[in-house]
Amino acid sequence: MIEKENVKQNSISSVNEVSKIQKDILWGLYQEHRNHARHNETLRANITNILFIASAGLITLITFDQKINWNDLPATIALIFFGIVGALMSESHTGLYLRHIQRSYSFILEIEKLFFCEELSKRNLSEIYKEADSRLSKKIGIFKHFLWLMLPIFISIVGIVLTITAFISRNQ
Image 1 (tube, helix red, strand yellow):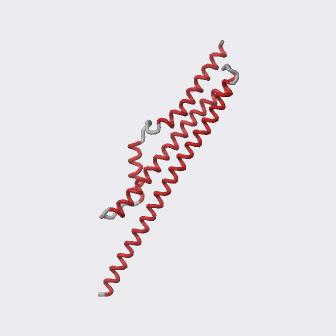
Image 2: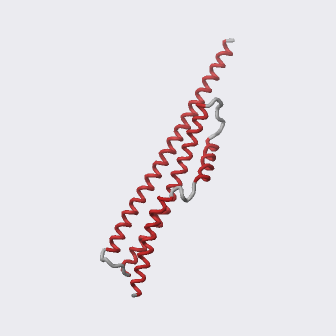
Image 3: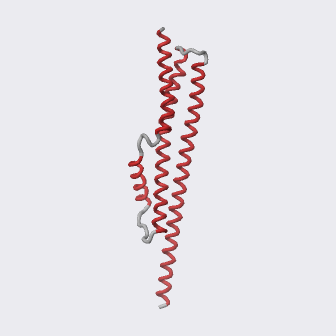
């Protein structure tokens, strides 16, 4: 009889240990994805700010002599390039940010299921990732991060207008 109780206590203790290890792994993954999301958001903001400062410098250079002519053409083309690069980088880092946010959200949901619901979750990590990514693909659209795309696109539009103005001034 004593042996049966020891086996029962060992199995309860091993279930508690497995549960604790599982919680620690899920919590670590949650924190990792939150940190990656924060990092991607910081990179996006820094790249955008650097491109805005460089674009402001180019616009100042182009308009310094108070006329736009053929000599300003390289700077106007660089301005278009800065806008395109800014839009691509913004799109890329915003997508990464949203993916990491969705994954961290899935890990928190899994922790809630494990420790605050009556039945234990039986999903493995790959299933959690797949669920997070499937929710992400349904939610992401071009308008989710419209502002962060609109600002670099505006720089490109300004560059295009200035390039056209430089071409027109050459023909006159």
